[in-house]
Image (cartoon, rainbow, N blue to C red; front, side, top):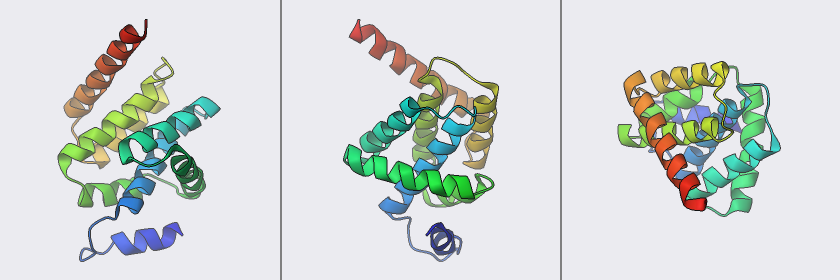
Length: 154
């Protein structure tokens, strides 16, 4: 399945990235980030489905199925270059910053920053064509949003 995905988008003359393929690529990146600390929990799995459901405007059940598919694909791929290359070529810069915000939200959601997760986010930012500075700003926006949401729930 994912072989045809890469074949379809690896040619320069390809059509724009479809919404379904974008959702899959994004979900694979989220799964990769969640697995970076070698502690892929049920909470992270559910959080990924929630993030995908919200940002892609799809039902939670569909997002959960997409996450399961992405887990299989992520386990079979050696690196993140294939996914980030497609996203970088097909998605405007502003949306790539939003993708980094989603990745940071997942990393920060457990309250613990892991060196492996930080390193992977730094690599993904670079592969997506986002500077370290813009990644840090994305992380700060997520932290601010999370602290506002936490304060509002008290």
